Length: 123
Image (cartoon, rainbow, N blue to C red; front, top):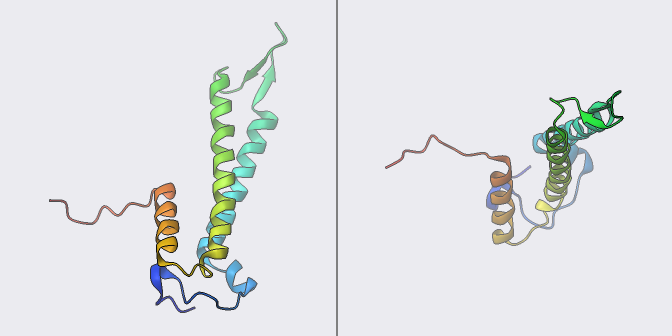
């Protein structure tokens, strides 16, 4: 793959190869993140609650705090949507002809992922 184009992408309009796409490290990592978000959401939704024998109310297993279970499910839903969105972004990245659009996608990816380079000198 030629990465001499703008923001790590080749020339726009090239042929799409599904096997090469699935073998990209970014796609593999995002698919693993997607899988983990499904596992976390399923575990908390299925076994994160118990019914009290005293008052027949549902309580969260994390210190009887419903906010803890809701937070875990909420973060896993955000991770699920982000993983699907960034996989779709990787799919259309090579077809983006505008350098400005590629820049916005790369900056959104870095901002969401929290990939900051602290090796640059500070003045």
